[in-house]
Image (cartoon, rainbow, N blue to C red; front, side, top):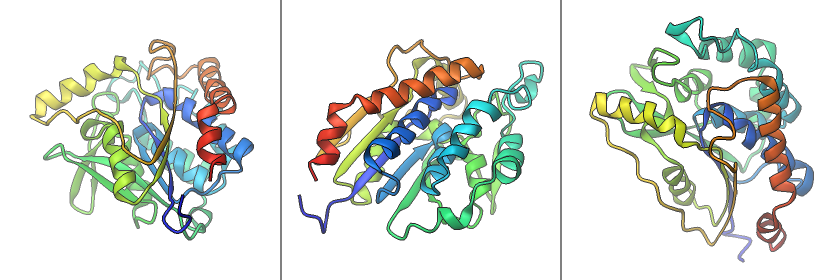
Length: 266
C-alpha cells in the first residue's frame, strides 16, 4: 500500500433513528483504533451531522445528542402530524445551542474532508456539499428534510433541497468516496427496508429516478451493518431502543476482524 496515495474513507448511510448504530460504531472506531480524522467522510440524512461531530472530536456530545436529545417529544411527536420530526428544533436548538457543534474544531483537521448528500427538490438529483460550506447548518437541515414527516423543503441560496436519501443511496455515497480518491472504505450501514415505501412514493409523486444500489470497488472495504432489518424502525426514538442500537454499533466494531485487517494492515 502506497502511503502517498492511500486514503481512508468512512461512509455512513442514512436510516433515521437507526443511525444510532453508526454513532456507536464511530465511537468504537475512536476507542479501539484511535481513528478520529480519516481523509474522507461521506454521510447521508441521519448520519450527516454525526460525522461533523465526530470529525470535530465531539464524540461525547454526539452520544448525548443521540441518547438524550433525540428521545424527547420535542423532536418527534405523532401529535404533531404536520411535523412529526422537528428538524428545525434539531438544527436550531440542539446543534446550535443545547449541544453546539464547534465549527472551529470541525475545520481544524487539515487533511480531512466530509461530504454530505442532499437532493435537488426540482430534479431529484443527488448533490454533495462539504463541512466547509458557509451555510453548513442550513445544508444539514436540508440533508435531513425527510418528506412528509418533516413537512417542508429547505431553500439555501435560491436552491431547494430535500433529504439526501431521496436521490442518493449507500452505493452512490461509496462512489463519491472513491471519486475523491479513497482506496480503503469503512462502510457503516444503518439502512432498513421499512423506509423504502416513503421515499419510493415521494420519488414517484415527483417523477424522480430511483437511485441505484450496488457496491463500491475500493482496494479494501470493511462493512459493518445493523443486523435484523426489523430491529429498529427508522422513526422509533425511544431512549432504550436508541441505546440498544448504539451499543450494537459499538459491539460490532469492537468484534470486527475485517476492520482489524483493514486498519492494521497499513
